[in-house]
Image (tube, rainbow, N blue to C red; front, top):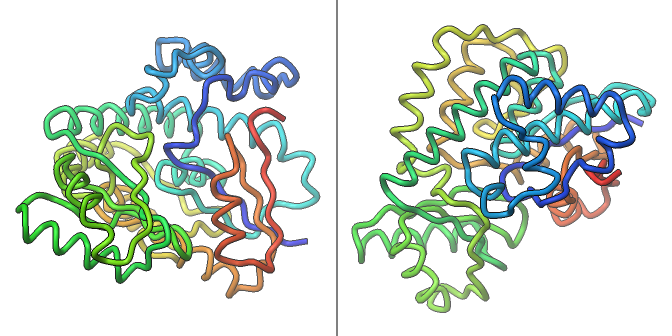
Length: 302
């Protein structure tokens, strides 16, 4: 059966991810050992043993989660009957998708992810921000709430992710998120749930990180994808390497159109989705967006 391969983004990390697979699979061990050597610290130990405070810090979360996702793909790809029909990754997960599609080799992508995490962490320290999920929200409700808070406070608050029906994520300053939480009832929203991230991703507060990462990517060569990559910013495949470079930068300050991405894949006749990485966040989003689709997870504990 044709399937889409999905890689999770920041927030899916947990202490202990990948440990069982590392102990069982030489392919997984090789990925973690390569990552430890390239990063200059034991990202494997951070994944397996924490502490959670460090694992949840953006500069460490991103290389740890990316490495775990690629390790899971290395462990499971041979057991799948056929290659994926297409691939996509949620936010940070887009880099794992690029590796799976052979746009970037693992080592080069890991260096980019580590730099991305560091720059986003620095931007967050310079202007502290938050992200929060609006439970039960439509995209229109979320956009109206953000506009009202911006008008009242002058602070940054934008839609960051349209994940699935009933779940939109907003991103902005801490004060703006607090104001949105206080006013959620005015817009018919049930709940505002802060996310386990330390920055205001996919918002204008990440512009300093975007500019510095653009300079870092100047010497990086992107290849034509070996299979379709559905990008966060377009909710459709892009194959031109120069455009891909633009899109991975663009998504730092712009929304992730995940629901539209899933709908595009379903529109191509895909009815099976395989999540590769820790937890099953994307599997849940598939089930809420495409109730008739089959979805399962190659979890990091497998």
